[in-house]
Image 1 (cartoon, rainbow, N blue to C red):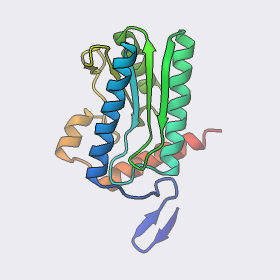
Image 2: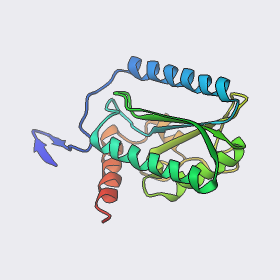
Image 3: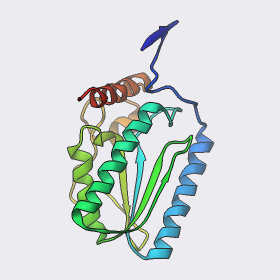
Length: 186
């Protein structure tokens, strides 16, 4: 990291800022891709995005985090012997996304990905959603899992997010710390 004026420059977190409109458009397009997979396969869809607070959604650090999430997601599906009917990965300015159509009961998939999110050092930065073949997204709470914890204070993340308990620099510093710790593990 290098200092530039009053700002600290981190190549891991450096990227182009995207607008809220871009993010909302990407969310709509992802929902359409999810729906297309549901319609085509009539099986649950596993949808992966990253936790990327702030206007920068694509950086070298986020790409490393996504690569590890993809590797872990693919290994999970392979280890469980679940048939993958479709797999898509999209590297977008609004953040990387992946979709799998999986021939398996949705609750079983949700339980497995919650375990993955909770058990991996980078898992808190992953957002694995499971959409049942009916089109209903499955929540962590509905599957009996605890709510996601805040990146900083370990309170439920929804509470901190709604109240803006932590500043954007605090959040991105914590994310970068997690990235650096992971990359330095060897």
